[in-house]
Image (cartoon, rainbow, N blue to C red; front, side, top):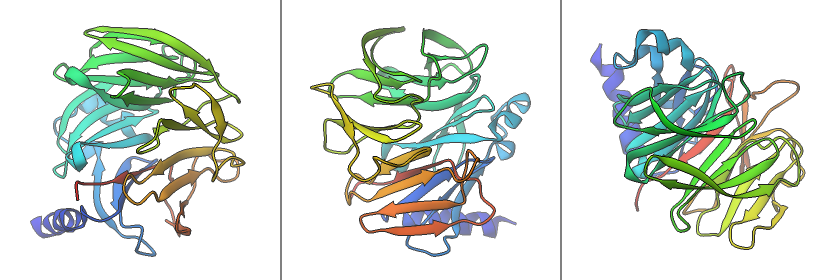
Amino acid sequence: MLRPILTSLLLATSSLAGDLLLVCGGSEIFQIDPAANPPAKLWSWRAKDRPEIPADLKNSFSTTDECKPLDGGKRLLVTSSGGGCALLELPSGKALWWARVPNAHSIEALPGGKIAVASSVNAKGNKVLLFDEKVPDQSIAEIPLPSAHGLVWDEARKRLWALGFGELLACEVAGDKLTVKARHKLPDEDGHDLRAVPASPDLMLSTHAGVWRFHRDNTVFRPDPDLKDRVEVKSADIHPVTGRLAVVQATGKNWWTEHLELFHPAAKLTLKGEKLYKARWLTTAR
């Protein structure tokens, strides 16, 4: 019984130095090698398999919408629109922290062992919450943000960037306090994904009708050179070493797709039967 699990872990570990992707959308988060076509699952995680997660919270991870690696692939942040949030140890998959957040759509690790979570449209949502990773399921601060969807910690500027329906916030985190320092109106409505562009002052963000770059110093928005005309982009992630761009764009009237698109060089992967929503590069030090 242990052999399939050990084989999966060995495959994942042996591939960590490569250009792997973590993808999510359904109840399973899994790791693939984009060089393989069709790509096999090298590692996977489901909340229902983790004994650390409370039984009444496990079903809250049925529609995962963020899978953000930390610490060179040693930890992973997870959210689900069903309300589940977790910090995982990799590759064991052990849950180190968890919380219930209505319609959670993004999560970010902050200095001092803090965690921020974006709570999107919900009667008890539309805000950004602050947690201590030593204390599961208990927020310590919050700020309102309609349709909160994206979070990025900016170490150089000591700011938490938070993306909502119509604006991008620059927030200060000081101890147990979360304070809005600046507000930037989006060039288009319905902010969705937010990521830092590696080795750049830019943030990349998607809206309903396009993808944009935001310069964090001169606070100017401009169309993204690759994705400016793309609608319903659910995630866009740039590899910090190779510069390769991974994109998940919803198809038809769905919030999901079976396809994952790559740029620089171009490629398209199809994962039949999967509901893809986010894709994040999993990188380690080289």
